[in-house]
Image (cartoon, rainbow, N blue to C red):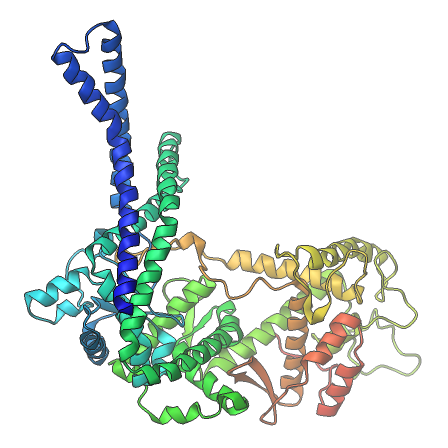
Length: 628
């Protein structure tokens, strides 16, 4: 009863959508009908006279213009290419067991089987209609549909109209086979209502209107075409607004009918599987933001993101008591075993994830190469820290901060040499600590002599630092209203920065990073003919995080400098934490108490906690470090 009720609601709403299309057609034909009546009346001698002649000409011209405009709108709606989700197509030869599982599930639900299967680098699954001619391959050479290996006319007919099943790739690696089947049951059940002719026609009409709106928004045309596109877009938006409520209710009815039909399939297991969906989402988000994003910023993309989800969630189950018992599932057969070559599929979805969430190139290259998890500490973490440390010292050079003299350099008896003329050594952590720590009894506010004695430079940079501090709490340096600075210090134009030197250095550091990122951004590459359509100019489609504030950049760079000093003086090593990303290992033990000490230095100019930590571990800040 629930299935029938949901299907009836969906069909009623679909008919309402189609009635809007019929009304639009009737309005377009109304002037033509009036012209036919006037012409017929004139030919039969009923509508005679000069006035009727003028009316016939005016109405006939109006009817031709309206018919022409309606034909153009209808053509654009029919031919515009609807947007599709960026996915990795899975051919049946690459995953016969997965196709078999989906077919068996469709048979149990008594619904048509999906026409094909694709993976997306996200924790979600859905059905997507790709029956538009623009979405099909130029020739049936690619066997990524069920019909490619099947026989029988009925299967081919079903394959030509059924939607594509899109599965979140993290599900395949974290979930077990039974859990995946339970999660996909309500999704596959949606192919039943999708096959209903009225619902399918309504969906095609709504997608065509949406595609027409998107096509008319293209500004790269001549003025005449832009005017025509503006008119087409206005009409399409008008009809789309009229369809909005009915289309939404139609999709709710389809979802209700599918969910009710799937109740009979693995109901108890589906409740457990839903818990795994939430856990997989949490692990996937943490992996992307903490682990993958630093690598992407370095021009490297991890090639086994889905496998990394398993490692991250296993680590979470070890740390969090709420996740206890989840790791015991790993003894069961994982859903990725349904793929013939899981590693190849994982690499393809990892590259797509980097493209969607970071805007990286579509293919590997010298400046965009894959990295394995075994190489991540050396190829990403070590390079990131040394590159950030080098950038920090370049900015200090720009600000005119003197390098620390070599305390071990020999000199003759007498007073100690003047540090301003003494030979300096390479970049050291002491230089950063001394600069960010205000000297006793010396004012460091903007416009007063700074610790390194250059009031002109201080005044020049102090205004910029003060402007930056005002922006942090109101609009943020990247236009995010209400954004707060790190460590819970909301910006306020009436509250001076706790450490003016940090504000000045952070401002220059933000400018330097922005300049480097702008220089390294590659132009949008053209798409191949067989790739799914999406706007390359809008990449990344789903940015993971807002751009870092200047203070966050300074904190990251100071942390990187400390880690470089630890590696070069006490033999510490870079490491990878699956939940927290890059980490420092001292004697094989993860360092977990560095962040608050760095924040104390950056925010308050208090280097005592960090210096005590350095002494405890035997790290010598006056020793030069190797930069990237």
